[in-house]
Length: 330
Length: 270
Image (cartoon, rainbow over all chains, first blue to last red; front, side, top):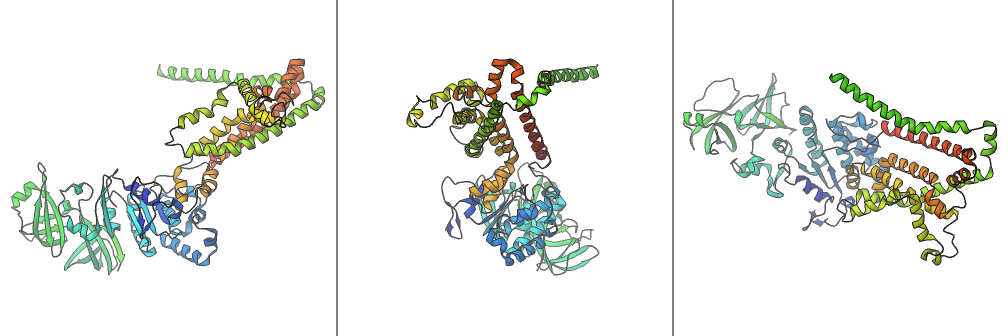
């Protein structure tokens, strides 16, 4: 669920959790009306922005807090818990004190604390907000992997667009307390090629491409998107699936095929040109085979090159431009 | 020039603080001038003194237990359930009445409720609400109540509500959350409230004079001894309460030191 600050994202989560009572309407989970169920009966997990680990308990006690006495004695549970901790990479932390942990470790422990109770649904309120960039990217990849492996439906709330590309199977766009759109990621992207709609403030739809790695050499990996081979920096295992983001500003357009230092050149057709009045830049919407990309260039250049709808043009970007937001074994 | 201004400020602070500290500590030294060591042991074991002292300890303990039983839940209610409560300010004002009312006035009001001629006194003619240990307990409980309630309320309010929310999401009922999360995290403030209530109950005089001049609490004993024989006669009682105070100060110190080291943390940041 993506939306700007103040759009009501946290409110939605609090309503689902039962921490807030709705003024009217009802909440259905798996077809069951949970509106009048108290918080403790709803079988949900919820991690806040602040991990809020219980200060008077150690790491292990925090993790098993939600288990009933009966569950704790269960050997099968023990095994599952050990597996989960290994998966998250925190099994070495169980005897530590809360004070000795880093922000990323605390978020993982607060997630483990929720997952051991096997909730029906997991709610996450911007869990990466307080972390610094390198830790954030690493943890984000871990999150998707662990949640997928646990097979737990998760509502992940954020106001960062790249979180959506990195994590989402489906997206809900929230603005001013209203859900403007919900759908699978691909259909949202396909349906919203026009960034000057009101949604562009929060979800302008950067260029997201998915492909499979076919080669990796000298710190550059080649991956296949449709029938095209594209290159990005980094060593990724062959056959793994990558999801990359390329900013529209990083896509250069050329009327002719030229040999530049940029590794990625694709021939595209212009479908649409949009421009805000009084803006120096224009968005050129392109289609390459079945996927759409957008390039942002100055209006000056657009007129110099004489680019118009239905033109064929070359879209160029460097191997250093893509940001890898998803990395999965196929 | 600036330097002198800053130093001047420090000097003024030091002087004023010094006067305040001396004012508080010096009277303790005067007791030494009145103690005759040879007679001290005799006077300390005077039966009246000892009876009064034991009465104070027992009644203060019972009062504190009552305050814990009723005051802590009230503090919880005020801390957690009055955010949108319409009568919120009204409630909070009522609680400090026993604090701002002169103890003698509290005692007179309590007589109105509990004296033999009052509705309550007439409803239960067999029960001696006044001039009895029960009367002592009633008086002490009344005047010490703000200490328990306010300290506990502050302690509960200092605990981040996130912890309780998470406990409930993890499946704990409100009751379980109170005992497993809120109470342990508020423990230090509540214990301080208990100590302060207990000390206040022992030191209570004004309301006790009205409600139960007899049997003598240690405070009333000191009061009477002083009326009859002056400071010399009151010395034994005073020494006993000073020893009690030192004990309370030591406990205070131990507990607040522990809190500083293992205090409740608000965790945030990378």
